[in-house]
Length: 160
Image (cartoon, rainbow, N blue to C red):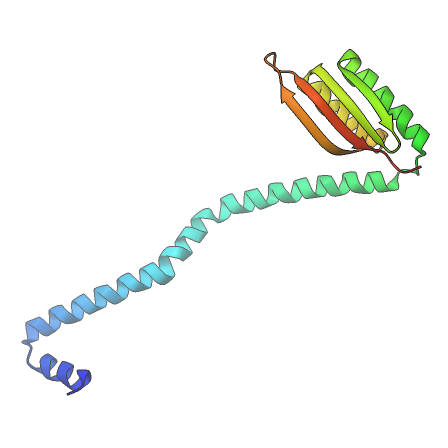
């Protein structure tokens, strides 16, 4: 005997009150499944939508800012290697003072930091990137007990 005829026979043998309780239990089970599969996840998505929208808007603003910076850098006239070296050395003197020393080898410049203030390093890197068009290649920095940076930063200058 297959399962379907056995179930029909069992159903027919139930009292009307038992049939009602089985139908109610089935309906509750179906309702619970619908909630778990369709309604619950949709409500969770709606609850999180505003937070996700704000995060995506913030990312969009950041990307637009980076795009504007990139376009500004692309719009600048070509710069000679000598100008880049001069501007990089000037930025080291202005922003890092005696805490930074430069060693130039072709298109690579190694800047050694000794007790440089974190804010000064951040400003110097920005100025080196924008003015001298130097790109950071490597950085080996450690924070000393005074909260300042020690180490080296290797930059690549525009080719000759």
